[in-house]
Amino acid sequence: MAGNSFGTLFRITTWGESHGEALGVVIDGCPPRIDLSREDIQKELDRRRPGQGSGSSPRKERDRVEILSGIFEGKTTGTPLSLLIENEDVDSSPYEEWKEVFRPGQADFTYQAKYGIRDHRGGGRASARETVGRVAAGAVAKKILEKEKMQILAYTVELGGVRIEKIDYKEIERNGLRCPDRKAAGGMEKKIEEAKARGDTLGGIVEILVRGCPPGLGEPVFDKLEADLAKALMSVGAVQGVEVGAGFGVARMFGSQCNDPIGPKGFEKNDAGGILGGISNGADIVLRAAVKPIPSIRLDQRTVDQAMRPVSLRVRGRHDISAIPRINPVCEAMVALVLADHWLRQKTLHPSSHKVNRKI
Image 1: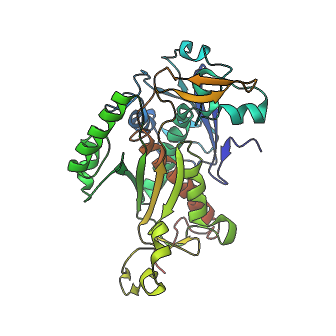
Image 2: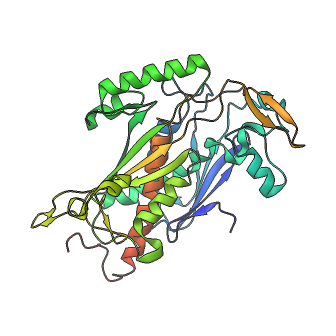
């Protein structure tokens, strides 16, 4: 396994590099007769593309998607979908000076160790640009989930040490950081400007909420739903940690506090984050992803070249100050891919029915 594919029944393979001709994804296992247009995919790509907010990269990419296969008369055919996004605004010149130098915090050293060769231009395959294929595939997965009344929403709960104090879901798309707290968003913007002036970058936390997921999704033991969701989110380059429900907070609880009581109308609180025993319980699924600062900073850093000689490096090029908010739709996409896959897997247990039970 080369590690470029993800999923069991709904399976994707992404391809392409940051400064290559194009990037894309092949989706296998998409059910037939799903309404799908280029616009359905484009609206998700537009949420991820550069140029959003004061901390975004100045790289100008339209991220226009082309559907090469798997669609006929506006519906999926059940055959592989192939999606392509061309790179249009590539400038590799800032990377030539450092092509034999390992940038701190980047995958340069590890890719060289694994393959003995690497594309130094913009990070190659290790670049966040690779996620464009994930978001395109996630848009298709969302179309499957929408038919089943499942919704996924990612929003910023912390950035640069500024944390939200309230959640107003209507506020999320009203500000450039996709933050549900207008006051906190203002503080986050100020932190971004301060870091930008210093030549530094910022990390933060993204919360992902899934509404309408029925009970029963997930597999026992090794393919637990939260395990696959954590793997999906951790596969995103900037994500360093994942929490489910109360997350690390459970380590400070008594069992009497942690257990979610069950009443006639369902679960009365949700510290479990919508998953028990690796299987969805019908409550909202709540996840959080810890996002590290972008490693490309305009400050002197100590490193070595390929001959292991000491080098002082100051990164040039076009980079985000924070992966947030552009990583938010990437998180949504990865969660959508997992849920679509497990939805299809659950349906195999009930081959005579097209519905998964929504009640116990």
